[in-house]
Length: 352
Image (cartoon, rainbow, N blue to C red; front, side, top):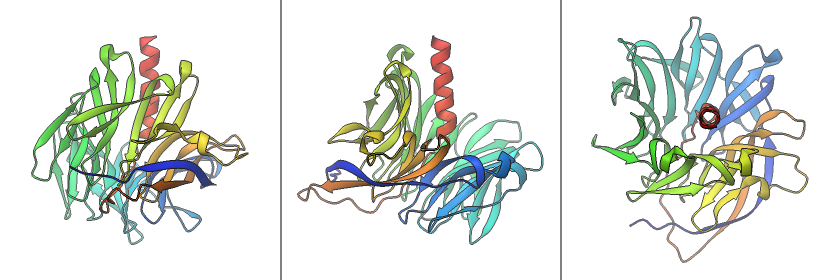
């Protein structure tokens, strides 16, 4: 049995607008223990979209493979970054950025790939095309790329033990370090997707509910999938989880009028991050994609100038001293957060 220190989130100390690479928008996808942030941003004149690393108050464009659209999705403790970059042709390839060098991780024999997460050992997971045109989840480790599952699968997170989560055949999955696959099931509906995992093996994602009436964020722990709810709407998704089991994501409000970034703790339930903002901040936080063990949250929202930009939010929390502290755990943001929220909105429209 794993015990975690109970945290009570009381307020946000500061919120930082990470800015852009010269364009009109940016999105943050991941953060490491040092507070380094990765994501995507448009460049001057919105001429292209580049992967960024934000460190020490500076946003740096990590470059591309010659195309106009690239994104960074994950970062580990050493500052190694993964993502995908468009080539001069039609397709995008997964990349590993390390030591100032952008390396193409290739594919599984087809055209196109994307990397979604990296652990502290430098193991990378994602999705890649095969020679027959299928898309399979992959693990890149020690310079070798290995297919993990059947056609139509993707891997979205990997922890320090090498446990991998992702989605295949309409259900989220967990692959342990020995290769055993667990299908996570659903919240009663027809499909689910896993987006992140911590070192304790706790998994987050989203799932259809009974009758596919809604799609809600979940926390899977100890073999049980728990519905994290919404802010009154019919849609939510969880994208990141830290060592203490704190979860971040996005949830719709009543009438699906808006999507608000959330923080979920076992003691406080789902908290609207906008309620924790310093007075007069002028921000509307829409999606939270990752949280580190210090309680730093990243994502994107509307800033005081009306631009959709990446943010870094420092939350203040107090822990129950009687509860044992968890061991150090890896954190992985969900780089597909933007696409997920778009798909969920489309599904609501289809049901209407």
